[in-house]
Structure formats: C-alpha cells, structure tokens
Length: 298
Image 1 (cartoon, rainbow, N blue to C red):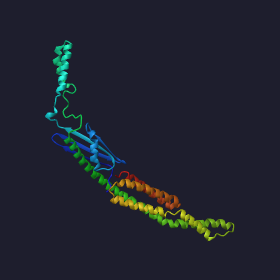
Image 2: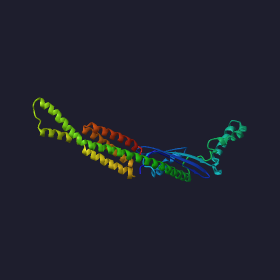
Image 3: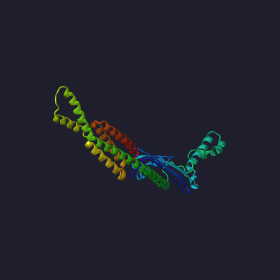
Image 4: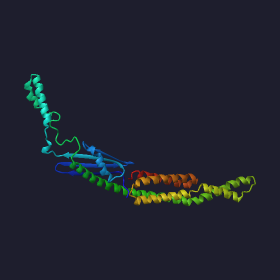
C-alpha cells in the first residue's frame, strides 16, 4: 500500500491535573527528520518521541506541536526556606550596617518576590515527570494513527493516478512498436528514390545488394527493440510495486522512473522518425507527472 508523505493528525488528553494537545504535520523528505515544538521542557523529549514516530513513518519531515496545561495542586506552592533565610539575614545585616534598622521590616516584606524564594507553581526546569511523558507518548500515538489514516487515503488516490499514467505510457509504447516496421520500409523507399535519381543522371544502375546493405545498416542503427523491452519490463515492475510493495515503495519507484526516462531518451535518439519522436515526447511528459507524484510517496 502506498503512503503519502503529506498528512496531519491531532489528539488530546485530559485528566484531573493535565490537559494535553498534540498535532503532527508531515511533508516529503528523502530521509526522516523529526522536530518537536512547544514550551520547555518538551523539546528535550525529541529523541524519545522520534522512537514513537518511527513505528509509523519511515521518511519525511515530521513536526510535532505540543500544548500542555497543568492544574496546580497544593504541593505545587512551595517556598524555598534556604533562599528565604539567606535574603532575610542579608537585609538585617545591611540595614544595621547602614544605621537604618527601621527599614528591615519593610524590606523583608518584599522578600517573597525575589528570585528563587517562591517559584511559579507547576514550573519545570528539567525533565517532566514520567507519568506526564507517558501521557505525551500515548497522545502522540493517537495523533499518528489519525495521520496514518489520512496518508493511506491520499496514497490510494495517488496509486490510482500512477496506474492511469502507467497505462498511458504503455499505449505510447504500443504505438512505437506499430510504427517501427514502417520506419525501415520508409527509409528503404526514400533511399531507393534518392539514389536512383542521382544514378539515372549518370546512367548508372543500382544493384539490389547495395541497397539491401544500406537498409540493413540503418535498421541495425535504429533498432530500439531492446529499449522497448526494457521499458515494458520497467512498467511491469512499476505496476507490481504500486499494487503490492510495502517496503519503501517510493524509493523504488523513483529509481524506476529514472531508468524509464533513460530508455525513452535512447529510443528517441535512435529511432530517427518524427512519429516515434512524438510518442517519446508523450512518454516523457507522462514520466514527469509520475516523478512529481512519486516524490511524495514514502
């Protein structure tokens, strides 16, 4: 099954002490790149969250947005006694040294607003609690599952379009095969006419074996049967990958499109026929459309 590298998924978690929202967005990339956005300390979880992502996604740019609101509890409001005593002692020493002991009570009343005495409730300066990390990972899995559903739906549509393009290219190949016998016959007729005209002016006859030899040389140089066979083989592999491949089909399709482009260029340069060149132009146009789609397949 083909999977698109573009998608979106979101999920939420709510408990008595935690409201959590996770959004996941993906775009195409040759490799897997995961970034986590949100207030501290969530970016530090990027390595752990990437392990969760890898269970769903093989390649692409994955952006995870985390939003978290914690409900404060009584245990969140804690005064730092060491900082408080240090500030109070320093104020007393300073006011006594300045002969202003009356200022001490007023200054001590401002101590709670000083840094480190009464930290904001719920603030984290390090790794979040394990239960919170578990909630984030579980919510991320739900968002990735929703993302996967979207990627599968888009991948199915892309598969249908790829098979339609594959069929159109195959029709152009059939047109080339039909045209090839006429190319050699047309060259033989033109060669006979041109050489015959020149030789008749000098009253020289054209030997059949000479004409046959020249036509055989042209037929050998313009023979594209091997290229057609390889291109049709690539199309068969293309069909198999689109319908059955689950292990990184995007990379394999990219390789096949590149190889088919080379074969098409060789056919156009060797055939030396306007009608065949038109078929090659249509094949290359179809391959370009395929290439654009394949770039967004995982």
